[in-house]
Image (cartoon, rainbow, N blue to C red; front, side, top):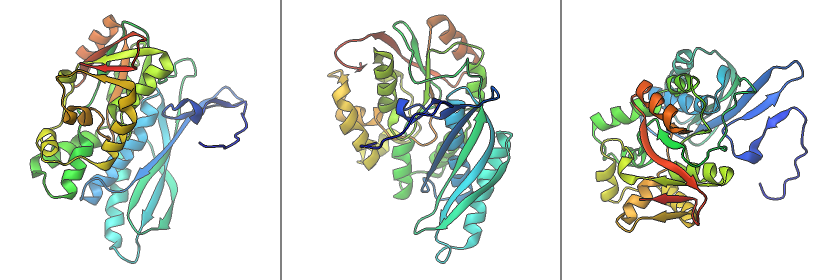
Length: 314
């Protein structure tokens, strides 16, 4: 944040300085609220699905910390004189329907005239201050679980270039539109040592934060990573988004890649995600129980004592 001088406030239990997914505010009456905001430009062509994905993405930060969303405000940028208002209606309807699925109301928002459509939400939730999930606290022996397949960054770039089949677009939309609500609700039965969601920094970027904050090293088995259909063929043809390349350029200094892995593998592990899954560290017993309860999850690695690099990819 540069040279910003930000005073501490007694109500702020967690702020942006920890790189956690949401801010946690402890109110005077004992109530603890959780707050997040997120918005972006379209990642798919269909406006309704874009609205759904943007809403699911914003809500994810609440679920990733063990909170329950209460209500949301819309954030909208739209070229009102260049595109039909019906497109904006569809975007907003997508957000409304996804918020309804999360069982929360949208109570207002703010819009500006912008050159390119943008949509997202500011979401307020509540949380038990004794059960806040953070992107720190993992320890050697914890298993690493991911609840969604990777590759949405590559697919979004492919969609813009009209290189993705209708079937694979539908699968990608279904993944990005899926709330992390069910995964989080199941996880509340256990005691995760660290949790975050995978978004713009990609798997390795977010895992780097967990390892750095926990003073540990993660060992990831690349073969255990699940990718959405069509991702490898697109990547092999050169469809790699700029955000993914920037992620890799930053995170590679913290990683050791097995010599059997290609440069393309390195990039795919760094792919910038939209509305990705939860990245979870759990002890071995609870990890196996969670995976039995949430069958879409994948065991991708293990936490080890701190070594030279924060992440080893084998």
